[in-house]
Length: 527
Image (cartoon, rainbow, N blue to C red; front, side, top):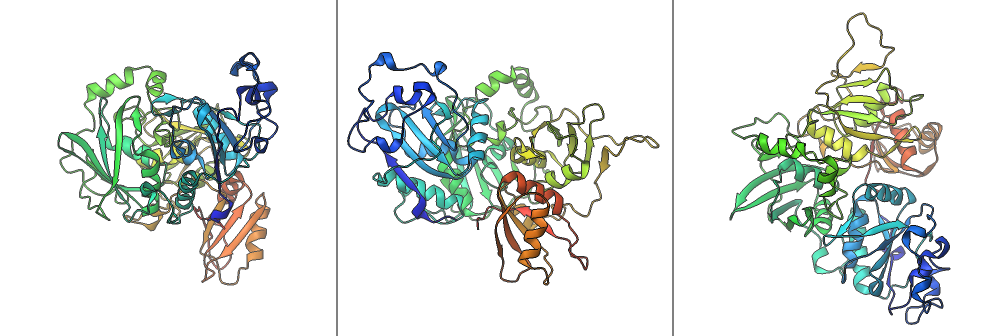
């Protein structure tokens, strides 16, 4: 994890530091944030209202890792602003303009900022049930003072969680380290039904959800949800506590549980152990009354999505592909539709390898009449949801792929004797499935695509130079490398997430000699 010394947080004081004329005048926000002093006024701050340009008239700013957020509710906290960017990557800086109801948020990479802008262009972001506006800033980085200690504590605590570390002792009370990976969740004002699957979709954006138990107590719907580690539970609590699943209702109240492990006996609508798919269903009932499910399906999909307050911080996996997959919703079979593929380069094997990071892909079919699209059948609906939430919008072979649930219930193999040019492959019996073994440690190591790759099963005679050369030849630049102590495992960092994805596709199961096949996965660690 990066050191805390490079995290700067500032709050500009005074009412006229940043006028709208500076923000929107000819597409330039201001000559420099540093021109706006902490105690004085910007030289442009005395401009009249007639100089203020409407948002619609401003020039579109090019992509930047700094984002400008407007129309925030009064007294919005720094943690609420940070929560907007939390699911998309590391948040490295924040500047709040209290008197203007505005803020600037700096993400760790431009890619993360682009992903955030793309997501919020389809789902309106909300803070305290109030829609806010997010756009690129003309600034490539924020240079702020660190005078506001509370804001600094919030950002440092979030940075610690994102890096897998522990928040500093100066963090505010709500950000103290969690001792348990289990969260207790209460749903207030439950106007719409909330299912186990909806909770899994929302919380899986922050890490691997291992187990969920739902129940009703004191006439309130409650749940116990177990992540793979306490820091992930802490990050989810920071981001989601107090947020609404839907506009103005279904409010999440989250605390840490005293339990450190959940004992799940049945996989049904009331409980689920995602590490043990072989558990019996018990006496569980359908997750939603069929009439209710039909009513949800009958709604206009845009209005239902528009009703989502995207949990401000969740960028919810539930909405990652532009849908809310309530139980009973069409497409819960485990078949995914991937589109906008690079048809010159994509193969069933490459899709099997990439989607196989998030589940056991059974069959892959590239569509004959539309070769930029493919169907991928996962082992079950939960694995499909996981793959969709992590891969939708990621770049593969130079194109941002789109992943959504398919209406198909299975992928059909070509009829005997029919040559489909190798567009369909059956991987049902592949030895490369990562999750066949119940309780496998692989369930605890599922992460979004990152620049850092985890390598394992490395032969003892293979050097750092060998691995650097191998991944460089796959296309891209190796920025950093670190062997684990026994040299059987290593971390390798590419310069972009796209390069890391390509490296994983090309080199997972690569024969290093003497039947040593390299194992490659994404890592949450940094070098």
